[in-house]
Image 1 (cartoon, helix red, strand yellow):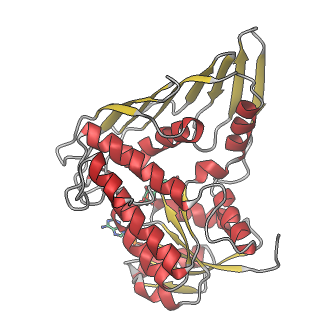
Image 2: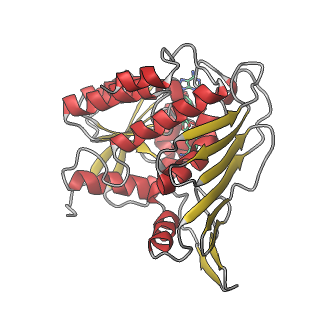
Image 3: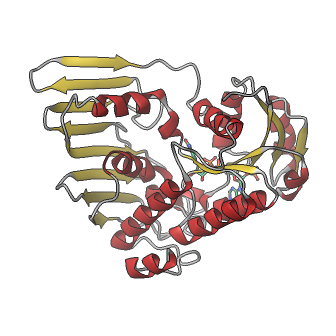
Length: 343
Ligand SMILES: NC(=O)c1ccc[n+]([C@@H]2O[C@H](COP(=O)([O-])OP(=O)(O)OC[C@H]3O[C@@H](n4cnc5c(N)ncnc54)[C@H](OP(=O)(O)O)[C@@H]3O)[C@@H](O)[C@H]2O)c1
């Protein structure tokens, strides 16, 4: 049920994605950007001016007492858990960037903090809230392509090696899998659930992050997903879903502002669903958070906390198989131990 409430938003970490999010937030009449926090005062001031936020801080702590209803955490991966919990402890609803956490141990701590504080928590898995994803799910539900046999999806873009960039920094949870590989993995998870087996090849950079990640996921019904991510080269960023009666092609970029979905049936018939966008794609997740809060929900009904936990477990399994390790954060390296964490 929609209310008349105007939600006061805050943003922590004013990098690239924070700009895109803030721009989209301006399209939502029930959202007001109230405060922004950066490690750099000039950046905070400029950002606040650009997006009309009355408060800005040169540190992250002060936003905790700025009277915001919802915080968008746009920090590098290794800070998602820490700052989500700090905000939840102040009863501030949290929308935290993907990946939810570095590993499933951290994700459990975040879930516990949300429950203990009875406060909303959601991963900013923006793909889930896009109209293209709703269309994809309805095409599949209608049985247009029969049942899924195989999924192929990639997300590769060239990031020149720079040991200081977060993408190549092991301690910050860098690497192609958590940065961009998460999208093909999420697509396969959304459509097929948890695999029974994963096979991974993940060549490493000098800084010991996966510069590429090639994945084969196998499912109980014998379905297979072929997925990959890379910083070494650029790809089309598209997805194919092969079914018993036809194929769905999600055109680039499949996880975001795709130009549309094409369906090719075995009969030769082609159906096209074009999409045009009036935003950067982030307003849908932000609107969803406010709808959930309007309804008094403590988590999303479309991307609940346990979905993020399961996705973290799947990413852990892929990392274990591909020997992608974050020594600072990982204290569990086997599935058996991970299972214990959940008991
Ligand atoms: N949903 C999407 O489409 C999407 C796209 C890109 C990235 N992401 C996710 O969003 C998060 C941020 O990505 P980004 O591309 O915005 O990164 P970015 O441009 O590097 O910005 C990250 C910001 O985090 C803050 N920060 C705190 N500690 C830092 C450290 N040790 N090193 C560098 N920055 C630090 C900085 O903000 P201040 O200086 O203001 O404190 C920095 O500007 C990541 O978790 C990433 O996975 C999501």
